[in-house]
Length: 258
Image (cartoon, rainbow, N blue to C red; front, side, top):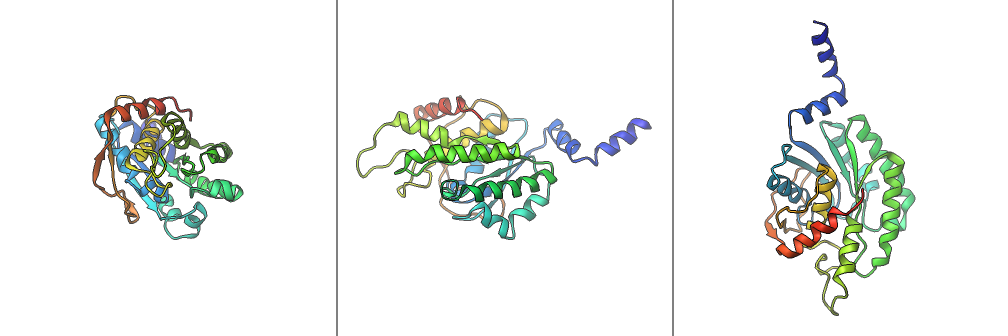
């Protein structure tokens, strides 16, 4: 009887619920809060595809609150992100700041990450910061982006998904791009990811979330520019990455440090 009473009490504790979900191989429920750097090419579903291909015991179950051009400040002022977090049941919440905000207004990013981290803690969700990349014509800004993301993570005890750092390492190996052309990672705007760029982000986030090397995963990605509604991640058109290129990306991602 004593043990039954203890078990009943544990079920009321959020931490015990999260442990219970892990123990039963329930899906990994992840909420993404960000903008087009996440929804272009349907990054959450690319991670889900990789997890399925790897036969992960815990399937990847993503939901999204993604608005084009949005800052974290905009999400906090809006009507969707905080209520979505407060619903609870999340294993992880992934935050992605507007692409230049860490450079132009780092203090606001640090403030807003803290606000969202507090909300995540209330529902016992782990927090991951999805570090983004420098614009194609401003590669030197990656150091500033990385510094601010890592400070924000350190301030709130979050984990970094160092996408921007792997992106930078790929570009260093890629070398110069002919005039009028673009790096394999970018769309023609020199800002948003190509399907290959999204594959970089997906391999890094897969490693961050599952704690396993992405080496050997399939060369699969997606291709869309559509903004999804709030809720489950959409099922965007599938695409692929050349196998040799995917292997190179996997190797770079496997060396990334959270």
